[in-house]
Amino acid sequence: MVGNSSIIDGLKARIGDEWQAGVYPVERETVQRFIRALGDPNPRWQNDEYAHPTFVVSLGFDRIEQELAKDRSATLLHGSTELECYQPVRVGDTLTVSAKILDIRERPGKMGKTAFVTFKLNYMNQRQELIATCRQMLISY
Amino acid sequence: MSEQLYYEDVVPGSEIAPLVKQPTTHQLAMWSEVSGDFNPIHYDKGFAQSRGLPGVIIPGQLAGCFLGQLVTDWMGEEGRLWKLACNYRETNFPDETVTCKALVRKKYVEGEEYCVECSLWVENAKGRKTVSGKAIVILPSRERTRPTR
Image (cartoon, rainbow over all chains, first blue to last red; front, side, top):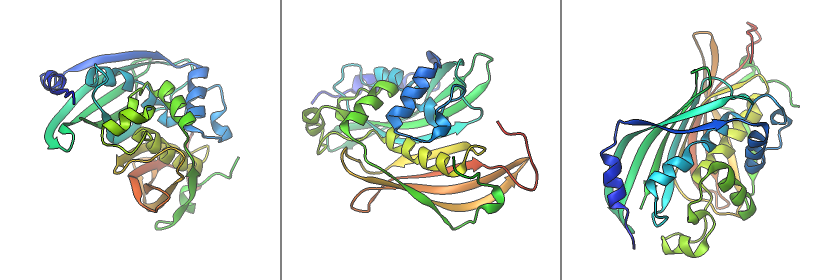
Protein backbone atom coordinates (compact mmCIF):
# COMPACT_ATOMS: atom_id res chain seq x y z
CA MET A 1 0.00 0.00 0.00
CA VAL A 2 1.40 3.39 -0.94
CA GLY A 3 1.12 5.85 1.88
CA ASN A 4 0.94 9.59 1.55
CA SER A 5 2.84 10.51 4.72
CA SER A 6 5.25 12.75 2.81
CA ILE A 7 2.33 14.72 1.36
CA ILE A 8 0.79 15.08 4.81
CA ASP A 9 4.13 16.18 6.29
CA GLY A 10 4.41 18.80 3.56
CA LEU A 11 0.92 20.07 4.32
CA LYS A 12 1.62 20.22 8.07
CA ALA A 13 4.28 22.80 7.36
CA ARG A 14 1.60 24.93 5.68
CA ILE A 15 -0.98 24.96 8.49
CA GLY A 16 -2.35 28.48 8.82
CA ASP A 17 -1.12 29.65 5.42
CA GLU A 18 -3.78 30.89 3.04
CA TRP A 19 -3.47 30.40 -0.69
CA GLN A 20 -5.65 31.13 -3.70
CA ALA A 21 -7.23 27.86 -4.75
CA GLY A 22 -8.89 29.03 -7.94
CA VAL A 23 -10.96 31.60 -9.76
CA TYR A 24 -14.30 30.41 -11.05
CA PRO A 25 -16.56 32.33 -13.42
CA VAL A 26 -20.17 31.40 -12.56
CA GLU A 27 -21.93 30.66 -15.83
CA ARG A 28 -25.53 29.65 -16.30
CA GLU A 29 -24.45 26.30 -17.67
CA THR A 30 -22.18 25.57 -14.67
CA VAL A 31 -25.01 26.34 -12.28
CA GLN A 32 -27.47 24.18 -14.22
CA ARG A 33 -25.01 21.30 -14.47
CA PHE A 34 -24.70 21.37 -10.69
CA ILE A 35 -28.48 21.17 -10.28
CA ARG A 36 -28.66 18.25 -12.74
CA ALA A 37 -25.89 16.40 -10.88
CA LEU A 38 -27.67 17.00 -7.58
CA GLY A 39 -30.94 15.84 -9.18
CA ASP A 40 -33.00 18.67 -7.73
CA PRO A 41 -36.17 19.15 -9.82
CA ASN A 42 -37.38 22.27 -7.95
CA PRO A 43 -38.35 24.86 -10.63
CA ARG A 44 -36.88 27.55 -8.37
CA TRP A 45 -33.39 26.59 -9.59
CA GLN A 46 -34.34 26.78 -13.26
CA ASN A 47 -33.46 30.44 -13.52
CA ASP A 48 -30.85 32.65 -15.12
CA GLU A 49 -30.06 34.65 -12.01
CA TYR A 50 -28.77 32.68 -9.06
CA ALA A 51 -27.43 29.30 -7.98
CA HIS A 52 -28.53 26.81 -5.36
CA PRO A 53 -26.83 27.80 -2.06
CA THR A 54 -24.89 24.52 -1.94
CA PHE A 55 -23.39 25.24 -5.40
CA VAL A 56 -20.19 26.59 -3.86
CA VAL A 57 -19.21 23.19 -2.44
CA SER A 58 -18.49 22.19 -6.05
CA LEU A 59 -15.78 24.87 -6.30
CA GLY A 60 -12.28 24.43 -4.96
CA PHE A 61 -12.40 20.80 -3.89
CA ASP A 62 -10.45 19.72 -6.96
CA ARG A 63 -7.55 21.93 -5.86
CA ILE A 64 -7.56 20.45 -2.36
CA GLU A 65 -7.66 16.97 -3.82
CA GLN A 66 -4.62 17.78 -5.97
CA GLU A 67 -2.74 18.73 -2.81
CA LEU A 68 -3.80 15.69 -0.82
CA ALA A 69 -3.79 12.92 -3.39
CA LYS A 70 -1.17 13.94 -5.93
CA ASP A 71 -0.39 10.40 -7.03
CA ARG A 72 -4.00 9.11 -6.91
CA SER A 73 -2.93 6.36 -4.51
CA ALA A 74 -4.40 8.08 -1.48
CA THR A 75 -8.02 7.59 -0.57
CA LEU A 76 -9.99 10.64 0.46
CA LEU A 77 -13.20 10.43 2.41
CA HIS A 78 -15.30 13.38 3.49
CA GLY A 79 -15.54 13.61 7.26
CA SER A 80 -17.60 16.75 7.68
CA THR A 81 -18.72 19.94 5.95
CA GLU A 82 -19.84 23.22 7.49
CA LEU A 83 -21.19 25.63 4.94
CA GLU A 84 -22.16 29.21 5.73
CA CYS A 85 -23.86 31.32 3.08
CA TYR A 86 -23.92 35.09 3.35
CA GLN A 87 -25.11 36.11 -0.10
CA PRO A 88 -26.59 34.27 -3.06
CA VAL A 89 -24.22 33.27 -5.85
CA ARG A 90 -25.34 35.01 -9.00
CA VAL A 91 -24.84 33.99 -12.61
CA GLY A 92 -22.16 36.32 -13.96
CA ASP A 93 -20.23 36.44 -10.67
CA THR A 94 -16.58 35.50 -10.58
CA LEU A 95 -15.73 33.66 -7.38
CA THR A 96 -12.24 33.58 -5.99
CA VAL A 97 -11.66 30.68 -3.63
CA SER A 98 -8.99 30.89 -0.99
CA ALA A 99 -7.96 27.90 1.10
CA LYS A 100 -6.38 27.51 4.49
CA ILE A 101 -5.42 24.34 6.35
CA LEU A 102 -6.56 24.68 9.95
CA ASP A 103 -5.51 21.40 11.48
CA ILE A 104 -4.02 17.99 10.67
CA ARG A 105 -4.24 15.02 13.01
CA GLU A 106 -2.92 11.56 12.36
CA ARG A 107 -3.59 8.21 13.89
CA PRO A 108 -2.99 4.59 12.94
CA GLY A 109 -5.88 2.97 11.06
CA LYS A 110 -6.75 -0.39 9.53
CA MET A 111 -5.26 0.69 6.19
CA GLY A 112 -2.15 2.38 7.59
CA LYS A 113 -1.72 5.86 8.90
CA THR A 114 -4.88 7.95 8.60
CA ALA A 115 -4.80 11.74 8.45
CA PHE A 116 -7.71 14.01 9.39
CA VAL A 117 -7.24 17.27 7.52
CA THR A 118 -9.41 20.26 8.40
CA PHE A 119 -9.41 23.20 6.04
CA LYS A 120 -11.51 26.20 5.25
CA LEU A 121 -12.46 27.68 1.90
CA ASN A 122 -13.57 31.29 1.53
CA TYR A 123 -15.56 32.36 -1.50
CA MET A 124 -15.28 36.03 -2.54
CA ASN A 125 -17.09 37.63 -5.42
CA GLN A 126 -15.69 40.15 -7.90
CA ARG A 127 -16.57 43.00 -5.51
CA GLN A 128 -14.46 41.41 -2.75
CA GLU A 129 -17.61 40.51 -0.83
CA LEU A 130 -17.53 37.29 1.17
CA ILE A 131 -20.27 35.09 -0.31
CA ALA A 132 -19.75 31.89 1.64
CA THR A 133 -17.30 29.89 3.70
CA CYS A 134 -16.95 26.13 3.86
CA ARG A 135 -15.02 24.31 6.55
CA GLN A 136 -14.33 20.70 5.71
CA MET A 137 -12.63 17.72 7.26
CA LEU A 138 -11.17 15.13 4.95
CA ILE A 139 -9.97 11.69 5.94
CA SER A 140 -6.95 10.59 3.95
CA TYR A 141 -5.37 7.15 4.05
CA MET B 1 -44.36 26.22 -6.80
CA SER B 2 -45.24 25.37 -3.23
CA GLU B 3 -46.67 27.88 -0.78
CA GLN B 4 -44.23 30.10 1.08
CA LEU B 5 -43.31 29.01 4.61
CA TYR B 6 -43.37 31.79 7.21
CA TYR B 7 -41.56 31.96 10.54
CA GLU B 8 -44.88 31.97 12.39
CA ASP B 9 -45.92 28.67 10.74
CA VAL B 10 -42.93 26.74 12.03
CA VAL B 11 -43.54 24.46 15.02
CA PRO B 12 -40.46 23.29 16.94
CA GLY B 13 -40.49 19.52 17.32
CA SER B 14 -42.27 18.96 14.00
CA GLU B 15 -40.83 16.88 11.18
CA ILE B 16 -40.16 18.08 7.66
CA ALA B 17 -41.55 15.95 4.81
CA PRO B 18 -38.77 13.49 3.91
CA LEU B 19 -36.93 13.50 0.60
CA VAL B 20 -36.15 10.14 -1.00
CA LYS B 21 -33.15 9.92 -3.32
CA GLN B 22 -31.85 7.04 -5.41
CA PRO B 23 -28.35 7.94 -6.49
CA THR B 24 -26.93 5.90 -9.37
CA THR B 25 -23.42 5.48 -10.76
CA HIS B 26 -24.56 7.79 -13.58
CA GLN B 27 -25.26 10.48 -10.99
CA LEU B 28 -21.84 9.86 -9.42
CA ALA B 29 -20.19 10.47 -12.80
CA MET B 30 -22.10 13.73 -13.16
CA TRP B 31 -21.12 14.72 -9.62
CA SER B 32 -17.44 13.97 -10.27
CA GLU B 33 -17.57 16.30 -13.24
CA VAL B 34 -19.17 19.22 -11.39
CA SER B 35 -17.34 18.80 -8.09
CA GLY B 36 -13.92 17.91 -9.49
CA ASP B 37 -13.86 14.99 -7.06
CA PHE B 38 -12.28 12.27 -9.18
CA ASN B 39 -11.13 10.07 -6.34
CA PRO B 40 -11.39 6.53 -7.80
CA ILE B 41 -13.41 5.27 -4.81
CA HIS B 42 -16.38 6.93 -6.54
CA TYR B 43 -16.04 5.09 -9.89
CA ASP B 44 -13.52 2.23 -9.70
CA LYS B 45 -14.91 -0.77 -7.81
CA GLY B 46 -11.57 -2.62 -7.78
CA PHE B 47 -9.77 0.40 -6.36
CA ALA B 48 -12.50 0.99 -3.77
CA GLN B 49 -12.25 -2.64 -2.64
CA SER B 50 -8.46 -2.43 -2.43
CA ARG B 51 -8.98 0.45 0.00
CA GLY B 52 -11.19 -1.55 2.33
CA LEU B 53 -14.57 -0.43 0.97
CA PRO B 54 -17.28 -2.86 -0.23
CA GLY B 55 -17.63 -1.01 -3.55
CA VAL B 56 -17.83 2.48 -5.00
CA ILE B 57 -19.33 4.96 -2.56
CA ILE B 58 -21.42 8.11 -2.74
CA PRO B 59 -19.24 11.18 -2.04
CA GLY B 60 -20.14 12.45 1.42
CA GLN B 61 -20.56 15.92 0.04
CA LEU B 62 -23.23 14.76 -2.44
CA ALA B 63 -25.20 13.19 0.42
CA GLY B 64 -24.74 16.47 2.31
CA CYS B 65 -26.16 18.38 -0.65
CA PHE B 66 -29.20 16.04 -0.62
CA LEU B 67 -29.84 17.41 2.88
CA GLY B 68 -29.44 20.90 1.43
CA GLN B 69 -32.08 20.03 -1.17
CA LEU B 70 -34.46 18.85 1.56
CA VAL B 71 -34.09 22.14 3.41
CA THR B 72 -34.29 24.48 0.42
CA ASP B 73 -37.45 22.69 -0.79
CA TRP B 74 -39.01 23.15 2.63
CA MET B 75 -38.04 26.79 3.24
CA GLY B 76 -39.52 28.04 -0.06
CA GLU B 77 -38.57 30.79 -2.46
CA GLU B 78 -38.20 33.52 0.15
CA GLY B 79 -36.27 31.42 2.65
CA ARG B 80 -32.49 31.61 2.84
CA LEU B 81 -30.18 28.79 3.76
CA TRP B 82 -27.69 30.33 6.17
CA LYS B 83 -25.82 27.34 7.63
CA LEU B 84 -25.59 23.70 6.68
CA ALA B 85 -23.33 21.37 8.65
CA CYS B 86 -22.97 17.64 7.95
CA ASN B 87 -21.05 14.79 9.55
CA TYR B 88 -20.50 11.79 7.34
CA ARG B 89 -20.74 8.81 9.69
CA GLU B 90 -21.14 5.86 7.33
CA THR B 91 -20.84 5.35 3.60
CA ASN B 92 -23.76 5.28 1.17
CA PHE B 93 -23.76 3.23 -2.00
CA PRO B 94 -25.19 3.83 -5.48
CA ASP B 95 -28.47 2.10 -6.31
CA GLU B 96 -29.48 2.10 -2.66
CA THR B 97 -32.36 4.31 -1.56
CA VAL B 98 -31.49 7.03 0.90
CA THR B 99 -34.07 9.07 2.79
CA CYS B 100 -33.32 12.60 3.96
CA LYS B 101 -35.17 13.62 7.09
CA ALA B 102 -35.32 16.67 9.33
CA LEU B 103 -36.76 17.84 12.59
CA VAL B 104 -37.34 21.48 13.58
CA ARG B 105 -35.34 22.10 16.76
CA LYS B 106 -35.99 25.72 17.60
CA LYS B 107 -36.80 29.13 16.23
CA TYR B 108 -35.51 32.48 17.37
CA VAL B 109 -35.03 36.06 16.27
CA GLU B 110 -31.42 37.17 15.97
CA GLY B 111 -30.95 40.84 15.14
CA GLU B 112 -33.31 41.35 12.22
CA GLU B 113 -33.38 37.73 11.14
CA TYR B 114 -36.07 35.15 11.82
CA CYS B 115 -34.07 31.95 12.24
CA VAL B 116 -35.09 28.30 12.37
CA GLU B 117 -32.70 25.54 13.36
CA CYS B 118 -33.28 21.98 12.17
CA SER B 119 -31.45 18.74 12.77
CA LEU B 120 -31.03 16.69 9.62
CA TRP B 121 -30.03 13.19 8.79
CA VAL B 122 -29.73 10.71 5.94
CA GLU B 123 -31.06 7.20 6.53
CA ASN B 124 -30.07 4.25 4.40
CA ALA B 125 -32.41 1.40 3.42
CA LYS B 126 -31.56 -0.43 6.64
CA GLY B 127 -32.65 2.58 8.69
CA ARG B 128 -29.11 3.53 9.77
CA LYS B 129 -28.19 7.19 10.05
CA THR B 130 -25.30 7.60 7.60
CA VAL B 131 -25.11 11.41 7.67
CA SER B 132 -26.18 13.70 10.48
CA GLY B 133 -26.34 17.44 10.27
CA LYS B 134 -27.82 20.75 11.19
CA ALA B 135 -29.20 23.65 9.21
CA ILE B 136 -30.17 27.19 10.06
CA VAL B 137 -32.53 28.95 7.69
CA ILE B 138 -33.83 32.50 7.68
CA LEU B 139 -37.53 32.75 6.91
CA PRO B 140 -39.80 35.64 6.07
CA SER B 141 -42.10 36.77 8.86
CA ARG B 142 -45.76 37.75 8.55
CA GLU B 143 -45.34 40.19 11.41
CA ARG B 144 -42.71 42.22 9.73
CA THR B 145 -42.19 42.28 6.02
CA ARG B 146 -38.55 42.56 5.17
CA PRO B 147 -36.94 42.95 1.79
CA THR B 148 -36.02 39.52 0.44
CA ARG B 149 -33.33 38.60 -1.96
